[in-house]
Image (cartoon, rainbow, N blue to C red; front, side, top):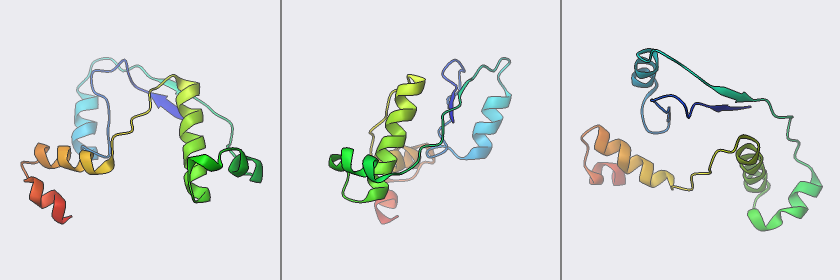
Length: 105
């Protein structure tokens, strides 16, 4: 399932902002619009792993790539290839932490 909240003024990103502030921001909006895309179950098969073997070394990497690709194509949402480390730096800045504090984590 893919949930598209692009029409809202607040776009949730649980990996950067904690849940409580996001819930408060979402509840403060007067209108909410979302599109829900129900996708079929994506089954990991040998065919999937062979056909997309260039997408990863481990089976879980190939499966994750395939699921992400299907979700993006079905919903029209762009993929964000920003490394998680950069998200941590952004989160540190939101909380007034230094870059060194992120490097220690």
